[in-house]
Length: 397
Image: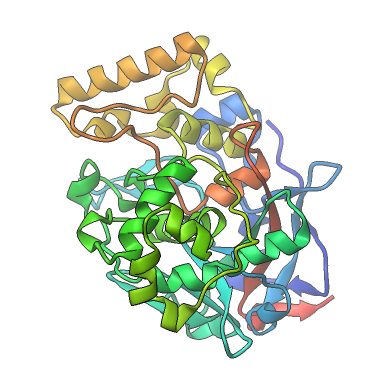
């Protein structure tokens, strides 16, 4: 067994020795459960850094909260992380019992846009409410002052003027998507809310959602988690820029004129929609592959499972919970799903459960996963920008 390499800090700031009660290696690396250590051949893994240098070391650009306005752009995504190890966590069934399980570190996500005051603001559901907060004042965020936030940016592959114009549309859509319904545990198989299924996959899906939001048909709007809301706002901005021409195409021009135009105005008709999402929400198989990319040095799920690997053993919990049905039926549904995935060697196949839409989802950690290793070859490129922390935890380089 070997240990994963140290990370590299770049830029004007360095993390203080002992910040968050740890040395840098213990802050940025996790000790692997035995099931994963045996696959990767390493005792530890860097599950903190999305970016890699040419030598395979993780890269960090630390910045204090107070300097965030100097590094941000419209449409950036914040991913909140916590300085904790991957290992033992409590189970819901028995608070006194702890099990080893896979745990990537992102637990909350928000989207960024520039306000009329020239400052950058972040917004996302926080518990049951949509909270707007100045980015440079993160230390007073409801999450507290000692969390860590990584910043990710989609690169659209279009000319810079069009890219900036599309990302500016985030400023309008954070206002229009103003009614939020957070899913309850019962809505997603009675397990954690981040497994709520995504309700869009294509630009056509987004146009349908856009029309309902513009018309204030809030009964048509699905429940979404923090990251679903933030990512959906980004995708609406890129694919439904609020030009008079596009509003007429989707049959929402009169409703927009009535409800929103006086407050938000219009985008220029010359601004063309992107026509694609940065990444399609993950299927369960793609989620498992993203874990392997981070914790098992990119081992192929298809190849590894074909050699008799036990998914439940690797994860430390029963994958059957995703079906939301009786114990026997749960195992049958998941066994059938993964049998199809492995037989067709296709991670993009969604899980289908009777009475529910095809199962794909967005996790707070997903931008990290896309920087580390894109899930599909046709995804847009995502870029790691920086990691923001309370300035008390930093020193000048």
